[in-house]
Image 1: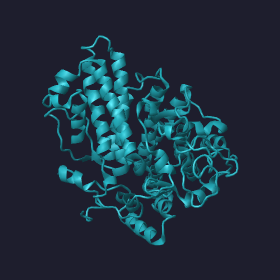
Image 2 (image 1 turned 180 degrees about the vertical axis):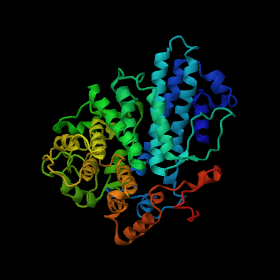
Image 3 (image 1 turned 45 degrees about the horizontal axis):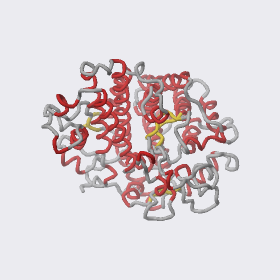
Image 4 (image 1 turned 90 degrees about the vertical axis):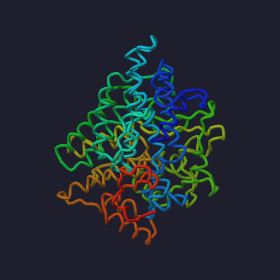
Length: 502
């Protein structure tokens, strides 16, 4: 949190040595023009990109699932249950940096309207809508990873701000963020003129999609059935708004890979942008495709390939080895490459070194359809299978008929469509929380534990199973990092890790 304040102050002037004392530079000197507001909003987006660059978003969404193999010890330790509060994968500073910038825009942008004649109320509110999206998305990552976290809604730019805050209930945070975003749906932009802005900045459709995702989570994690159904209905409504908007749609089967190369296609809702021309590059090709063990961090797990063969038609589905995992269509075992991040197409053509600017996709239209399907399935309404089949057959597989478990079918389809996109663990956790809240339906916690341990070695599987089963659902979240506990004495460690020490 302190880093957010420092980063903001440094971004407020060209020469960091001339920064005014706290509370002076930012409130009286800095916030004078539309450019100032856009600059801080741009910093929030860049901070979100930093959370991809340092692998925070990738690890939080994937490391406790079984679809990827990992190289780094700190990731392997979490996957195999050896989680300590000192593990730097539990650090949340990069996400709070996004929140710090977003809070600054939300608080100070309105005051600039009176100072800059070129900055009107409508434009200001559309920018504040983007800030609310970024803040809500950041808290959504935090709540899904840690459950209860400090809820900061004021920027740390003067001495009046409270630096030490206790954790707030995670569901309460998400409910408040949905309420805050809802005031800005109507003023958020439907489209931006430039393609990279239209996909790289939060549009109205991005706000709707994030609200749907958060609502699906709340419906699954809240035990009260009436409240739960309210959120499933909200998820369904938000997804329908995106569908009815008419701006988005699924790519054809033969064009599915264009989601990743070149990216920013009409299926996309929100992507974290990179540009080689602007020296905004990444290391995805090395992380997901290098044959060097020193630079490759992620590799397709053999267990995933085996499961995928039971979910899709390997011979015809473009998401098979030539499109999503595998070595460009080879039969290499074990598989080494996550192809969507290192290929140019579904064949064996690698991206060039100059193409190391793949975007990181947060939301695309396929997810809207699958979220709607899950909400309808939970409500017992509509035809969720028809929505799943839109994705399934678009991939190139034959239509699914009479599945024995529609939720499992949806989650399986998500595992294929969004493979290695930082979503798998959150999907497993969401379903696990729903199961945990509905023991009267004869479902419990075993599904989650089995789903994320079935490919581990027997000893690791037994260890993870024991730890997750002992303190559920607290053990399903990561511990608060030791450094955060030292800096903020109002925080309490997740009880599943309270006796681990350092």
